[in-house]
Length: 72
Image (cartoon, rainbow, N blue to C red):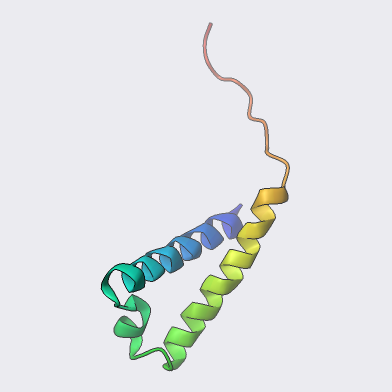
């Protein structure tokens, strides 16, 4: 559960970064951390890629059925 949420957060960060590149030609990760070749930027890019790979597993998992807590 924790890994799923962390992966989703990192994937959202990556999606927002790609959106800023597409809309404004601004790589926010590179801008914040010293360029695309900076070690921190490369670590973040790698973590986002691994998170995206992890999120692929979400497509193939059984969904947990939660009990219905509505009062009748």
